[in-house]
Length: 311
Image (tube, rainbow, N blue to C red; front, side):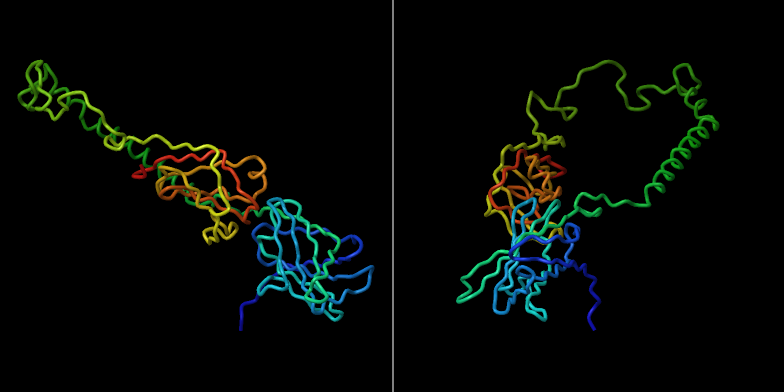
């Protein structure tokens, strides 16, 4: 017996000749359990879709997409008592935050060459509270604060106890003028001002240059501007369920493990199509999207900051 599946079902009345008012509904970005059940009519009479091919075309904030009854696993099925019912298993790439418009294209006749397009209907899409930008909360923070406070309290008590046991008196006994003063010779120190040759103390013999990596310093960040992301950069990816597409964007000198930050132009940033998460790899950065863009996009800035050994 299969596991029970929970779905959202939305009823839509649609006419190929005129607009019909439908109850407003909202879907959530990334959801995969939305069903649109559409009853198609022509001036109120059922439209028999037997033998037809139906495309559901969506216009959304980050472009357009479609689902096709003529394609296996296209997410569109036809049926009903009068043959005029269209059920769409809504792909999460068919909608994006904001207003989404949809229309049906019906292909019929010989070789399905006759096309009619229905009136449009629309629905809203909102971002879920849990999304790619959500920071998971934890109950450990109060515990950590309490442990820090206890540690600081214990350290203060230890210092107070050390003073009470006479460490200050012990130190004065070995100071100059005390009963048991320390001399330079007693601790192996030089008895007077003197000069060392560089080699005798392991110092460099002459002026020289260190690379940041050689002395453990951070390397300079890499900044690239107006970086084009060609359509050929994109591919399917399973890293983030809500963003099933990844682009490998070439950036010279990028290294795996670097901290990567990218900025999009205002329209692309506001569209919600692109994840905030990014990642550096050898020779570039990865960015993620919830749908394939229709054309080349441009990253205004790519910032790469070396972290640890990524220099």
